[in-house]
Picture 1 (tube, rainbow over the protein chains, first blue to last red):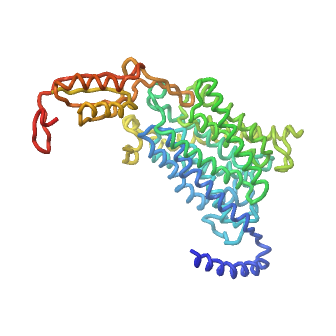
Picture 2: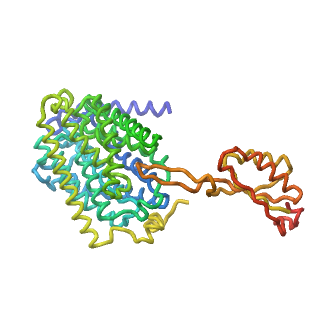
Picture 3: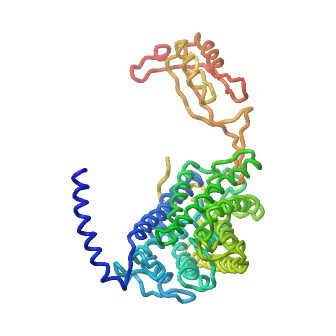
Length: 433
Length: 112
């Protein structure tokens, strides 16, 4: 061990010198900052960890035992499929070129991307890293939608739907908000994806849950979770991963990233406490599922606001998330009688929407350079409403059309017999013993 | 010979086993079962969805004893498994026609 680190030290010295000499020659094209690069590599890994195993565990712990593997398969498939599509054309269409509607195909299969080149949106880290970081966002957004249709969607239909949803919902929205499109240009604030990730996934999930119909036995049979301890572990991984999600959205190792992480953590804590407290008063017991739901609701809700608000605003936003998302997952869901299996709309959709609007209220100029309602700029709240309206309309409309299109080729839902038997065995030929 | 079947609360297993060992019962089969009697069940709530769970987890123990030991076995199971609360369980005693130890081929009381 000692010899090894000694050798490493000797190796490091000449490399350091080489970099120092090399830097001036590349100065015009890029000023890659090692600290920013290091942080963004870590943040990229953290966000990927949110989907596998974070979301896979969070979701599969909440379904029944016969659907655990199938639920994990949806997260896994999202990682594999979306990563390749992102490299093929996703990144280019979102982040290259700043047309109001869509980017260009200049970086098709990363063509023209150099090792030391940068994207104008993140000038201090390699463009490849920026591409990779943003890839993890596309992955988790697609994987989130699956929670609404858990327990009943055919795997082949899920794959087609995911590909289509990525192409026609995620890519345009991400470009509009982050890639130089018309929503970003209008001044909509969405730091890490309240619109692009959470509202789009939640609204899409709600539509998918309704198009697919309710699960067999919904409202009459016991559909209780297989193993909530998996969901608790998944929540922990999501929570920690979210530091990379929101902190990394600063795209640099700077104080703004730290502010975002602090607000994020506080919102998760406040959300967990609030949801648990509401259950305690209404149902006489604070459930573990309630506390983790509140934590994820707090995290989803702070997402668009983090990086624009002060840390203590995270607590207020987390409390709001706990109250509003609890109401959405219980009263609203019962009132309209839809079966959004894992409450993607109630937690992520409603949370994302709430966060976007609260960003308009709490935005603090000294943190993110923009003032919100509390600092005397009510106009921002209007812009945020505009962002919510466009995202809702687009995600709902396109998801609906896409599901109708996919159903022409393959039935969206498994047969009744397969559903009763469970998706693990009927879709994958495996089962938990 | 008698077969004594007892449905007991899961956390009482060790006490019952010790009590039976003390009176000379040296074998037992335990199965995890679910069921309900007077103890009905409980309500579980998951994000507002309420489920009434009727079937509660219990243990079913089976022991085969010589006829003269059956009453004593029932007595010690009763005293060791009892909490006084609803849901303590039940004991059933039935006659055994024939018994055989697979390894040696011994039969009836030699096989117990």
